[in-house]
Image (tube, rainbow, N blue to C red; front, top):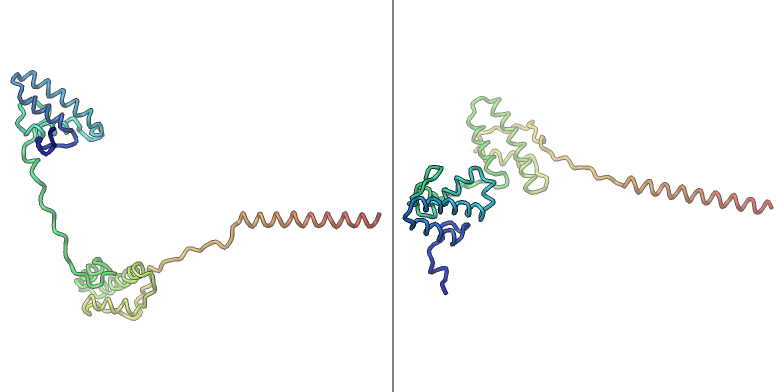
Length: 221
């Protein structure tokens, strides 16, 4: 019995060990014409084993690239495409480190701090005032989304003063109610149920009237 750990490393697992052995066999064929015909047959087999590659643009090109990768880039055959080099098989570059930035108020997010820094960079007082009001609105909306509770305007204004280190002037008349959520109204009754109830009442009323009329005729007789 032969274990997989004792076999050669599978270069591309999607094609299996048999395709890899066929490519190794083709490399050992001395006659170039026979080697070329054998490789082209292997390409057809690779396409049949991976039909999903037909949905990929230039899937034939991809098959030939995989053929040379499995064959170790030294397979001496003619290809309709440029032969790949060993550079494409090098490991990917290291992952970029995740930015470790301290957010002072996490419920507002990093965007608020960025907006505050941008507003502080403007020298025009009217521009700074307008941006300050926009930031206050955004902060109140973010706080409500985070806590699902009401928050006082004074708390929002105080937090902005803290974030801006007192450089953004928060005026009392600033409107910070622009992003108030609207609560959808819920219907109080079902129209079809009301109609059924009305129809039922009409039928009962009609039956009562017919019964009274019948009693009157009986007493007259």
